[in-house]
Length: 218
Image 1 (cartoon, rainbow, N blue to C red):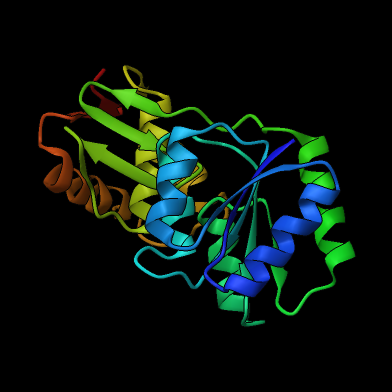
Image 2 (tube, rainbow, N blue to C red):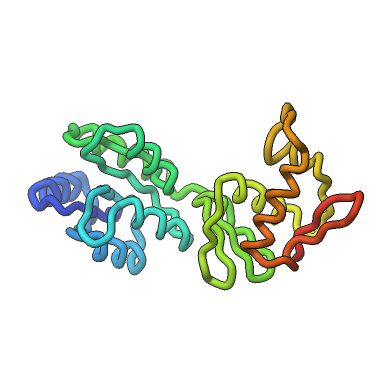
């Protein structure tokens, strides 16, 4: 198995490398986020060990970047802070597991073995409609290569429409899927969010069909 360790603490990086090599891994080590991202892009690994607090580029950005580029190698994220916000962000950016420092080496190896056994998981594909791209797993969207700054609800609405591009979907259907079946607010909220998306995507991307609903252009 080939592993990438991205860790700026020299002693910890060396210790992990020596331990994994004793377990039979081929190990590459990067001491900065920039070097780690470059190696992850240039080489193929079975598993990555990625620290959050790194010089130049932090672990969150590395993980999010790799996932946006379609690199789905299992990632075990290391954090020195046992804070819910860090753990949530690690998982939301695409990490498969996390471990809080200080950690037991036996636990580290067991976690890595579990990730390797699991293999590279299948992820939602990047959705496309014309020059519009969206990665549902990373919760990111781009138009003509430029990333769009969308809220969580806007992303949810965009994903719903892209998956049904070319189809007419009613306001009620959008409410049921993007909000929920028990939504009792003003149904015109759909029009508000459609308008927001049009402002960010371009007015021609979403067509209104009076009395029927909306259609995302293919």
